[in-house]
Amino acid sequence: YLNCAYMGPLPRVSEEAGVQAIQKKLAANGITLLISDTGGERTKVAELSRTLTQHRVEALIYVADYHRKIDLPDEARQQKLLLVNCFDDHGTPTIVPDDYMGQKLLTERLLEAGHKRIGFLTLPQDLVAYELRLDGYQDALSSAGIEFDSSLVQTAGLHHSGPQEVMLISEAVDYLMVLDDPPTVICCGNDRMALQLYGVLRTRGVRVPEQLSVAGFDDYKLRSEPLYPPLTTAVLPYQLMGTRAAEWLLTEIRGKEEMSSQQIQRIRGPVVWRQSVIAQQQ
Image (cartoon, rainbow, N blue to C red; front, side, top):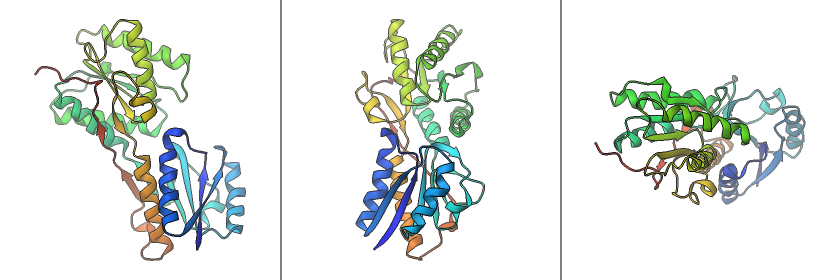
């Protein structure tokens, strides 16, 4: 009978599947998962690490609220530690989403559907996922022999939803749609942005997907499935990340191999194709 501890900001609804996957896998192997909320405050990590150590936990799992670089205090690294959805400069074993490949696969699918002019409303530029996904988008275009057009890429996402993000999306749409060769599909940095884009297009009388196709990123099903039309999107594989984190940790706890044999694991999610994208005539 062993204990492990999850530590980090309490997950948003879209990320709960990952924590649930960790808990389910560990429970099936007779391991109790203790959950501690840092509230996103680094100062709480050291205190929680000491408290959890007093409860004789076998390992710590730190799960970030989004893909980012972190710097945990020394107390957290004095025992077995696994990072999920984040990474550091200390070589700590890490599981992160493959943002690059997710955007590359989505762009490739759009190209296969005949879309040559693909607009891209990106996440904020200070996020790790921004550059990774932009690279995936550009590499997919390059592989298809399509020259990158920077005018099709607009930063319109903010860290939190609100009127300012809607305004940025609205301005980006106005810019894209008056280009000499406007996009036939717009990719959004996440499903929340896609939801807001639906509203912006509706106010302009633009029908999705008949006049403009839309794609997202996350597959947050409370958004992607109820939308009309349902949203084509790349999956952020939280559940698979959680399962892999638990498997990796079980291997380490049981001493069969060292987690350090593969410091960073990038987990790839699929593309879910729904009715928000229609094929273009070749």
